[in-house]
Length: 156
Image (cartoon, rainbow, N blue to C red; front, side, top):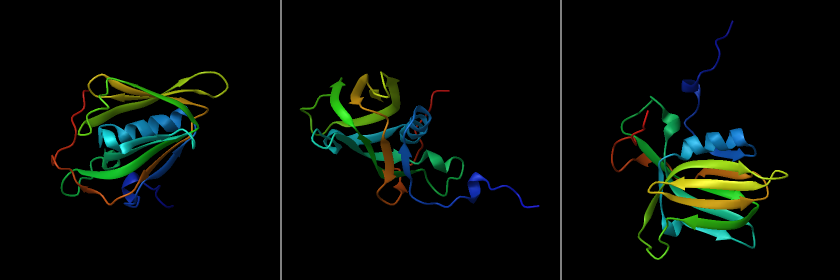
């Protein structure tokens, strides 16, 4: 009899995930928790109805398998079907501002539409009015050693 596969048996490959329901968004939220990004690395295209962030994502999927030092990777987090974008607690006039993403949650409205809420550290938030849940998370660079050489701390 063969043994079941385990997480440790997985390949060390870049993430390329899609989200189409609330459970998928919870997984994406866990993977992007504690990501940081310059304010200049978020963009909304009203014409394409697409909002994207270029994140420096902590590699939570590494779990306890730390090779040498904790790693980050640049990842694109994109949402499609975005009708409107609003933010609070963000000083858009400061191009040097670095934001930290804490959670991504979906607040359902009618007929599959709703609000995607991106909660930021420091009481900031971004609200995306979306037609439906349609998100992607894709690693776009090789992992690199986290500049702090530490994992972000988590409240228990």
